[in-house]
Image (tube, rainbow, N blue to C red; front, side, top):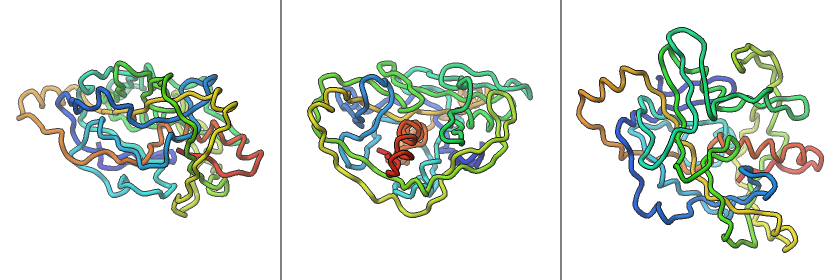
Length: 291
């Protein structure tokens, strides 16, 4: 796969090979990690971060190459950027496969799990959002497979990443980050969805002003009782061909300790939140909330 690929409003970055079974630091076994807060009645969706601090994703594997576009910054255009490992062969130790997509020869792509498309693309106020997993399948070359991994103790959710509920986590505050609605626009595009070519208006980010606004929120007790906390990790996404396993078996072991994935929030979970609050934001004229 190339170092960087642009498709359907997204940029996907190849972080290099991950050809051994990566093991997380021992501290990850007891760490709550990145904590998000959402409404109890909407499992796997979130509205706030537990704090406004920069997230640390030290409990996910690293790559041997990166792209400057994945550097930690708050430019909104980076929210349409995602990363994968190629060749990536094995889920990390204690993780399991949450989604598979394969292109057999030159035939169409088959999928399961998180790669399974919705019945129709998400539609909000005349525009649609083509989910990153659906877009990623278009990048697959003949005989390539894409694999999404999550810890076996967590649930894989398209709107949040890998998550587990923290029922005993106490909180009275949260954090919001905002993008003005004027920085979001629906642009006419031709794109691939569920094996079909579709022409429609698709949402994209048009603003370039750095995302610097953060707001600490104090929850009313009556509102807190409707909320729940989640421990969240980003997906680990890998792409490989069958020949990559053979090549790895005959090559020297490859180190998996190098450049860390960006600590900015990735599109896989951000854009789910984007659509959870977009309708309300349009009604109220408020900023679109990101955490």
